[in-house]
Amino acid sequence: MQIPFQFRALALKTACLAAYASFSLFFQTGEVYCDPAASAWPEGFKSSARLIAAGGPPDPFYRAGVELRLAPGSLTYWRTPGSAGAPPVFSFDASSNIAELKVLYPGPSRIEEGDGGEAFGYREGVVFPLHVTPKDAASPVLVDLKLSYAVCAKICLPQHTEVKLTLDPKAAAGLPEAGEIASAEAAVPAPLPARDAPVTLTRDASAAVPTWRLSSQKAIEDIFVEGSSGWYFETKKTGPEEFLILAVEHPETDGKGSIPATLTLIGAQGNYEFAVDLADASAK
Image (cartoon, rainbow, N blue to C red; front, side, top):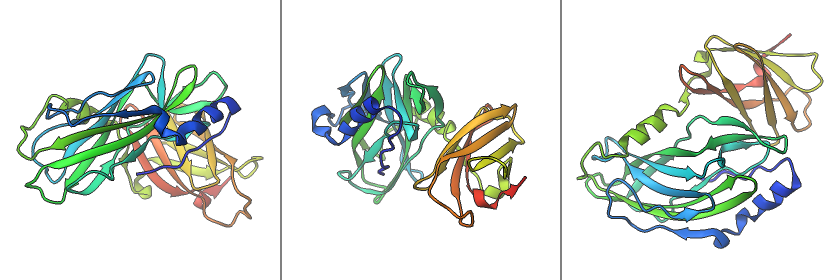
């Protein structure tokens, strides 16, 4: 799975993250490890990464994860990084006996940065759950991951590492890392049909930039809005369960086209995500 870089904000951070393409400067290599639940821990800049597994035969898929540990005060990014940054890039091309592999993203935090920007991501560490469906359920699966990610502390540096782990259908269930994977899966926003989303959206026709008001029927702490190419949204909390969504970057439009977006809601009662067309919101 590959997600394009997204760069905004200060030139210094942009220049640092532009080095993302020079992966060979930061290449780390992991090995197939003897531990059936985890790979080795290749070290990077203020970070280390490994593969972990929950164990047991596929039912219908293996539950595994990509675990990142970060030094205190450091952060890494969600699939949409915020006002500046680079999302993780996962490549499993060298893997074997895999019919399908899904990478899941736990709900992010909004992190204020010293340059006035906002990062969407994770502090201290994160586990990205993997659902690995084998071609042949009776044979082992080799997960060979080439991972590229950014780590930011006082400076931001791109990292590249390779880790490998064999998933064996004969491995015992409930391996030690199963709890970490389960906790990470619980933080992944549950997909909802738009009709079941617990929110109301209205367009603010008087605003200088395209703006929507969102009110929620559930307690939510934050929302993240991902748009199509050329659209970038900021959100502001205006009440206990109310937010403004502002399209601070957008292409020229006559106001008649669709505005597809994915909304991710973060709350104590659970995280949710759903797709909407903001152009369908009634105006007020």
